Length: 337
Image 1: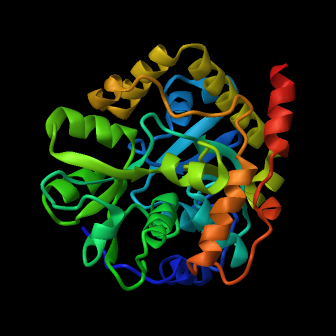
Image 2: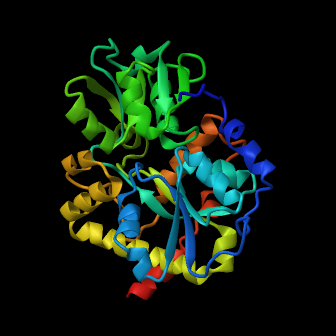
């Protein structure tokens, strides 16, 4: 389903967080099992090292039991953490910033998705007559979440081309995995598509789509790098305070999965395809890039925070250091050594 655009992420996320009391205690219905981590994400999102850690028992070998819950909208992951139903989850930086600014007790503890190969791109139909970003005036764009990178980088590209994102086109929410059919079926004119959707498009709709610009085009122009915080791995402050040992063991398993991905990219792609139940993944040469230490790219995070402020998702500038906790990864790394 396509949802109409909103001018601020606060409209779509924050009221529910406030209604839930921004809680971060145990989930309703009983005590949490020792050593368990309640994880919120979607197997269709490009977070291969995390998915491999779940399906290849890296977490289990670290002494962590994963209770997995799937979400279509990353904003709902933060809502789940705020309500106390999740300990750890995946979402873009912009959603984290807004939640932190509104008082939700959560921090980014690792990077779940770095730069993709090919990079996330904004695709249109080849027969659409859209040959440049400027041609999107009066069109409809699909984004995977308000305030996420597909939204922020879309708005960056639009403004750079002389368009006003608020008035010159319509921006609607489309779950990431539905973006490709939404473009093909002419429900939207342009959509941000990850590497997996692009591989799927090449197989099923060869020659029917073309790329206007990519995440790499944005980050190279703005900050001179190809690094991207596509998705962050968040942890509830209450979970870390309640069971820091389990949180560290969780990240120990994650670091071991990252190391395995780096050691054999081809094997990782195969395991990712099996875990994600999507053979299109096999067409990719490598998974999304992650640093060996698993840490968030801070320079890129500042750029994303600046965009969130510029486009009205933040009321005031945010200190990104208050939204990141790398100490758990540092502890996990010491255990591995």
